[in-house]
Length: 477
Image (cartoon, rainbow, N blue to C red; front, side, top):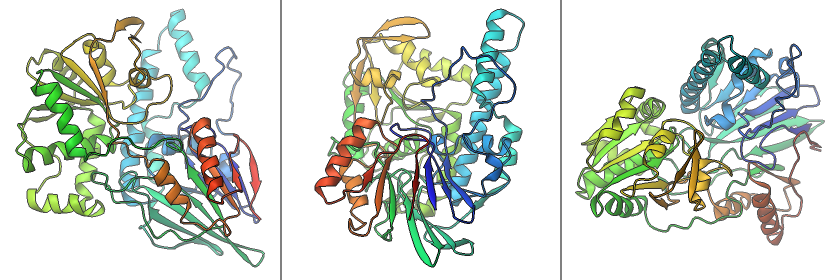
């Protein structure tokens, strides 16, 4: 059995790992969009070029840890390249992945339409899109979703003779799972755990990461926050209430919160609902400006039984997790732009969370030099994104080729970060005995974060730790 690392190696995005068994049965774990992929646009288009570094038609099975696009986003491309098998995941993951993949397809269609035309500029734009080679459309997503098969949490599922898979709650997102594979080869049973993204305890809505992980021979552990501890010790309600009071009541002004549409926005809306219903917090106009977030919120509402006990109890008492006075879901772009004309204090929650495109970029461009505006950063932002620049105190921002001074107040809290911090990651690894583990592979993190976490693991007796390069293969003996 051998394992090849094709994504999220010494970087955060693009999770993709190929496990090849001795009988040539191939299992792909995650197939995510690599948001940091470097493309040489100087190369001419020379006919068909395979998208994946392996033959997609030879893959027998795909396992998906969770729906986020950096884990699921290239599954339609896999089918376009000849894959004919199934995708196994939990039921909420299938529902959320469908929403995210259709959204990506719609964005791709919009890009293609914008590049149509005979001008040199249009042709150059189309060439760049074609060189990227990842523009799947709605029909591709439709074909993809017909092959998704939902598996229950904590159910040991037989893939074929001598191969079993178990999806174990990871807590990071609705439906998110650690994946444990057991394989019988040559009279020996080998086991391997893929962490997916590791959540944190007591997070709004999401269940806690499972404490019942079985010990395995090989472990893949994400390291997004391998060098960080969460700073905020306040509850989500207290942390958010403090910022709202300062930004919308004491000032009064507007509060813009960049937030991922799936997971983060739902946690924010739920926390706002609790503030208004349980603490008598004065309702302030809240705009949830993301059609994708609205669709995802419906999935969360539908799957109340898979949320944590606090959320289930709140739902029983209030009959809704997210609807509250003065909340308005924004659908059209026209309505989104009209928010700028709203003169009263308000809260705008919009995507993307890293401020890398999306409607929130427009809101920030319109308010970045407004001293009565506060921008609240609530999660991870990759280096180079506008979110990262704001988080690191940059005094000006270049948005759509215009340099704008940062006069708005920038705040950050990490109580809404869906990733476990260094302590959470260490606790995850320590569920496995260092004498039992043959290797720990560090993935899904920046290299500096991995190095720090690797050094920490060494102090705990975990010495067989690898930081794979892209394309590197390991024999799992």
